[in-house]
Length: 252
Image 1 (spheres, rainbow, N blue to C red):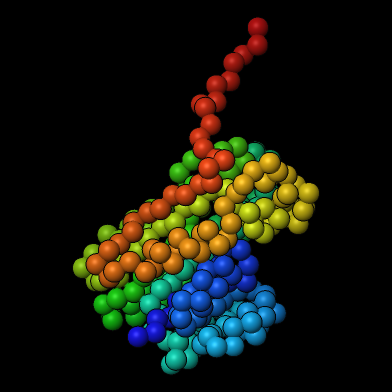
Image 2: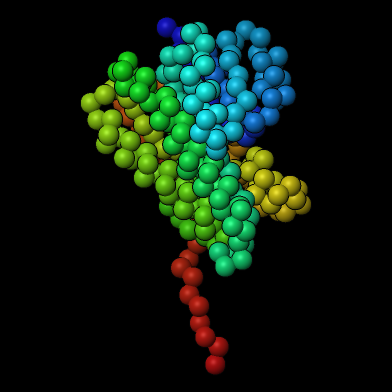
């Protein structure tokens, strides 16, 4: 039986790479994102894949509810939800951060994830099968200067995933949380509000993860037998690890 994957934030980065991966492996796709032209490009590039696209900003609850309500019969039974839509904005310390950036991260990374999950979950429970993979981050476990609201939003993703698992015990619905580290995509360009020079500097001299790396892991998680649940995967490139404890010393 051909399965259907629902991917949010499918127009770039991890979402686009995951859409490619599932298309290659014969899945039907529901792809949502804010950039219609990129969704259309994907469809043109994959004429043999059954794809339903929706222009949707997951920050808006009414848009999400309409998106799910209006799924065509051919794509109504969702086997996999990949909650990928998310972003980081800014790296200023908390006392200097832009509150609008904080609100956008909360609205997208937390509220958007909740809206899509809640809209699709009842049908999965009713069928007794389904899988939710949430795109977390190492920032949800490991703090760093300037991570503030972004790290907090990804800590929410981790705990929301854990609590979904508890709520869904016995339903047959699986939940996984994938937490990537340093990865090169449009992520840093967005974080620095389009400043390509700053974004490129993040990866200077490194060999970061790629969107394809993450897509392969997502597909592996989704492809486990129905009785296997991968609770959490944390992945970093070899060039990244943990820093020593920071100790501030007063100068005499």
